[in-house]
Length: 120
Image 1 (cartoon, one colour):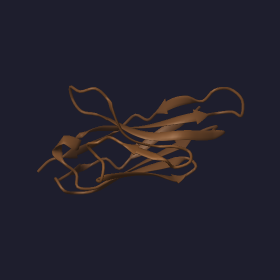
Image 2 (spheres, helix red, strand yellow):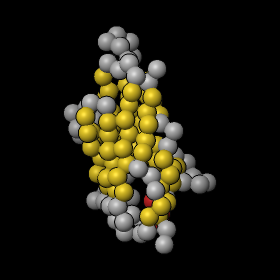
Image 3 (tube, one colour):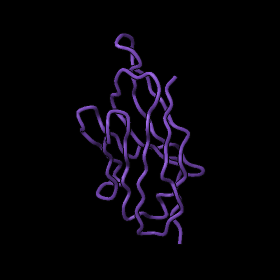
Image 4 (tube, helix red, strand yellow):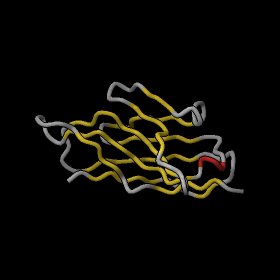
């Protein structure tokens, strides 16, 4: 069984920084892309940032220049969020494309989410 566990969500003021982490555990052969998504109340889940296995990155236009995604090791990803705005308030979800075995197709796994609230 594979599990993804996020941490680092908090209530902060506008302009502050937060660092979200997501660690995968369980029987894992390899992890392809790692990503962060977010969902604000009443809105659809949206992609925030993604990093591939060869560390190519892509960001939503709304977070470019403020957020940075990285792979901390083979099973962990970090989202550094700077200059936070009230519109960044959402539940942030970690997503990883994981192959559990050397044969068979990889599939997407999701964490349960961590709340980020930006408010004065």
